[in-house]
Length: 188
Image 1 (tube, one colour):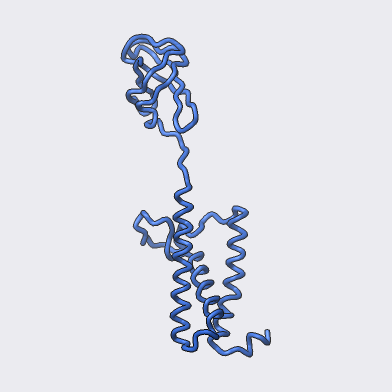
Image 2 (cartoon, helix red, strand yellow; image 1 turned 180 degrees about the vertical axis):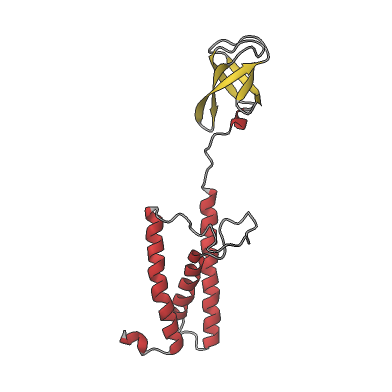
């Protein structure tokens, strides 16, 4: 530790920020890759609703603080001998720290584009073609079942018709949904 104690105060400050920040960043990265970290900057570390609802991440989070301090401290160390003005050095370090947060924002927004909602919603069956699985009685006198493909998976759902009897194997079109659970189908 004699190395750090012999440094000028500003450089010593950059090192005192860089070392613990780097350790925390490495721990966060390892936890992210093993799946132990679920927040990834998407929620605030305090109670206060400052989000506009469309932002892919929260600006004031522990992860963003670490990202800022990482960019700030290491750029301060890197440019310490290259930039003679201490005020300019601090301004450059702050700008680079903010750039680290912006870079993290870009990465998260690109990753959010990769997310996919694969949950089944019955409303997505409207106007789809289905195959009658269990005979559907005529004019809503009973229920049958159809097989309908939504989002790459086949679902077996209850169905009724307002027309004539639909035997097994017949192709039908879903025209509407009743009671948010029963498909109303018609012959194609």
